[in-house]
Amino acid sequence: MEDKNILKFKDEDGNVVELEAVAEIYLEKQKYLILAPLEEEAGDEYVYRVDVDKEGNEELNAIENDEEFMRVKKEYKNLLYSEGGKDE
Image 1 (cartoon, one colour):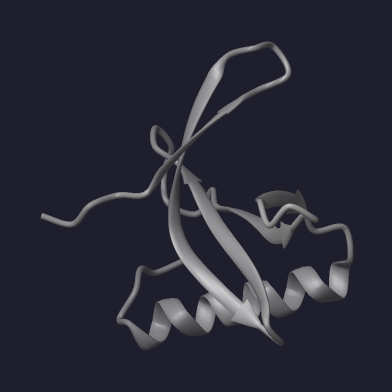
Image 2 (tube, rainbow, N blue to C red; image 1 turned 90 degrees about the horizontal axis):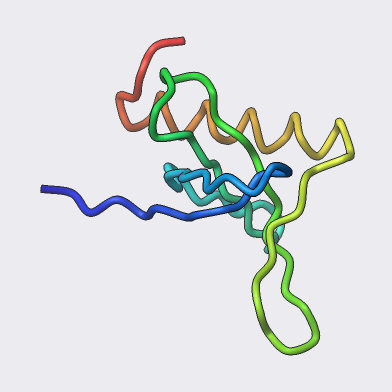
């Protein structure tokens, strides 16, 4: 049985939301996480850039640059299809 990497966050209303890290992607030494809600259908993934603060702690940040987002999305699709992944 495969272990899932589950991350817990609080939404703006204070509710705990669980997301599964379904992929790690590295582009030009930058790490990105693809997160998917546990309760929802495939295709509802979220993309976050993993930045490291001055203390060495990782923090997730939304990608605001469309070009950067599209590069990560393309790499994720390549990863899915190279692993015989899911259909869209």
